[in-house]
Image (cartoon, rainbow, N blue to C red; front, side):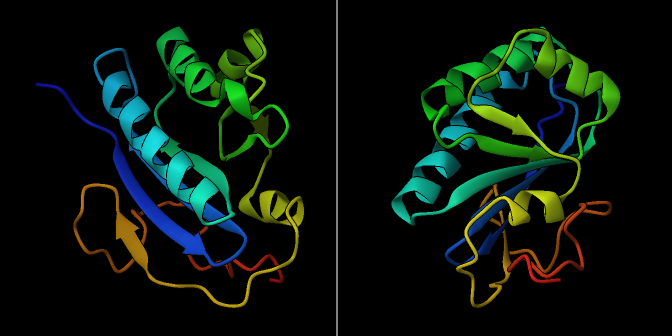
Length: 151
């Protein structure tokens, strides 16, 4: 049985689309990750926002996920996807071969501080699988944080 990554999305209007990933990311789930990531990258670009990936609840992953992220983001070297919550093992995988479309940061606050300060409100979450959601999954790092970057 394939365990698919759970994607929970929260948009900070005018600033960022935060995608919280959870579960196992492996060669079996990479096609789903690539498709969903592409969708959110397109939406963020259309809305003039940056994409932030919160990997707090992702189990350590290997080269297949690095390749998926590199392929999905390689055109974004000038405006990389901000990745937060990656544990040391995941950071090592992403740093092994530079993934130019990804910038690693420790926290969501760090990611938002790196963005222009243009947010005015925080809309509700939406699920990557089309289900309504009232909040992120358990440990999503941005849960309870103000997504406008002002605390």
